[in-house]
Length: 131
Image (cartoon, rainbow, N blue to C red):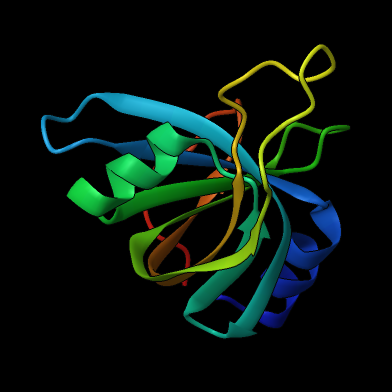
């Protein structure tokens, strides 16, 4: 369960690290911004996720999201599954000579059902869910 304290931390952090894997378990790490916590078991954010992240989520909806204070290196890991993906913006191409081809062309909204919340730190920790 996401407490009010964890919610405030997550929503004020500004960005998150997003781990996905394909059906064979090959991992991929991405970043997202502007996390919101609309309910005690939900994370939602929108970003221009790369095609690999979205392909992985089609094959395997399991996800881990780490939100960390860059000054301390401490934060939280949210483990769950993506329940809904939604296109919220689409670009019409890219600027040749300015942007390399292959950049994300779709902004996605991810709605995540959080199954557990863990401490995220380089210090000693148990990997047991909080609360």
